[in-house]
Image 1 (tube, rainbow, N blue to C red):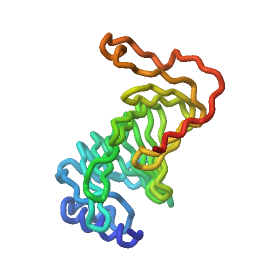
Image 2 (image 1 turned 30 degrees about the vertical axis):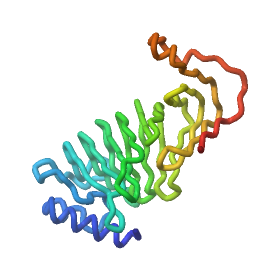
Image 3 (image 1 turned 120 degrees about the vertical axis):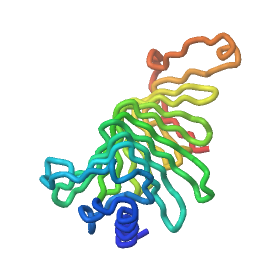
Image 4 (image 1 turned 45 degrees about the vertical axis):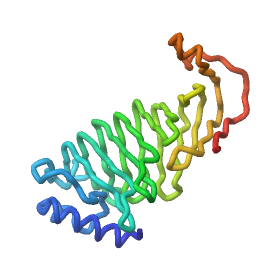
Length: 222
């Protein structure tokens, strides 16, 4: 979807659901595709650069492309800022993102206590208790995660913990595709293997206490 098509869809959807807000944001790039909120939850603000120009409470929306749902987003609070040349959305009370494939099946999800979306750069930044899962059930935990829509990459340079059905892997640095299926830990620190006996005995696991020598980067793309 090109930028003009995106702008057209966004503005039309805002007009449909939030007439007053559409007047405020017409001509700008936002992401309100098929919103499910109501006008009482959307409030326009002062246009000074250090103040939000838009607030949405208990906001849910769909991201569509070529008639297909690509993402679902849910947040307790959305704030839009419009500093010159660099509009962005802030989610100070947390966010949930769910990604769908072409058949509308859920393939991955991300939650975080704080996030920002940089509109022009098409980049998302999630912080504080970031949890991401894929269709295989693998769970990523970290404190900082970046998603770039243009490159379709998700990455971090921070500490990560990967929880799988049979192992827990920790390390520093992580990179993956959007589905979180083809991922790589840059600097692995340790691995705990979970056996049936472990599960039966409910043995405690603390991956943060693992010590390990230098290891090669872990690439689990299969």
